[in-house]
Length: 327
Image (tube, rainbow, N blue to C red; front, side, top):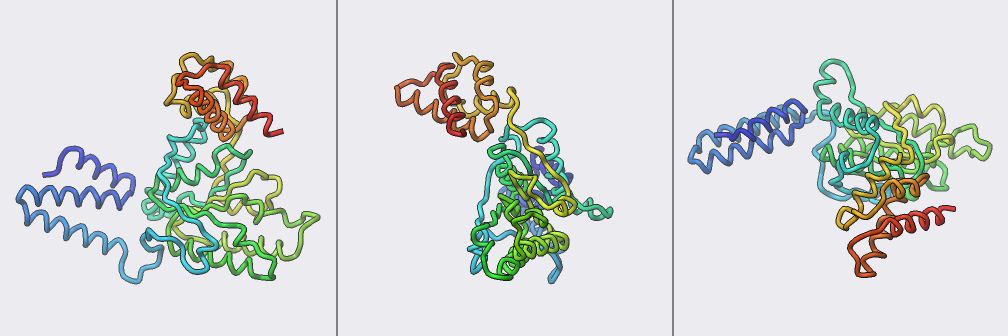
């Protein structure tokens, strides 16, 4: 018979709309029954699982196919890079409100069929804005990790060309892939595509690319998540904002978040001698990525000196060096 943990897992998966995990746990129960000599029950359970999967996606039904564990092929290989991240939202040092909003996106995605059955759509078109190094790209990876989806990063160098109409044609290929394979699709440095159409240095081809992108974005009703990330929100065309379901603003870390980032990166070394208040003061104005790199530098300096304990001076020096590199 099913164990208590398995029963709880089944109920939790059902509540969250996580069908793939639900079926996996159910198959574990069937395997356990088979080992216990309950062959008939095990076979009946497997048959029920197969029937449920078939009913969930009738032959010829519209919608994305199951996620293939393969690289994009053909022309898409030059437009998309794929990864299968394990990052989770709790791995990120984010403000409470931002983390809660991202968890809400995950929850809506897991229960998307329930929302749609009542006439509502889950959040899936997300615009991330803020300074570089504050976690925008990592957020796309965390969403993919939470949902068990591949992360497709759009290669702008392969997408944007100098030839008339070619970029729009490649955009169409990308959006066809978005509809065909469910995943998280990241348009990083999004301002390269979404720049304001009225800018003085604008050219006709860029206007046409933006218009095409707006149309594709408007028409897209797939199950994939589209994530646009930019460091230059002021460059974006205003028409883009109403095409996104939500805008997430990222900021430089507060002193408390800065301490959290540094402590997490230095967790394998002894840090009891560090004055974290002084370190946070030195970290002011640095991004999450800057803090991580400064911690790595301080740690490597100590290890090369045959030390596994860090002093406040080690960390403050590395933070100051990181700040000087940004000038």
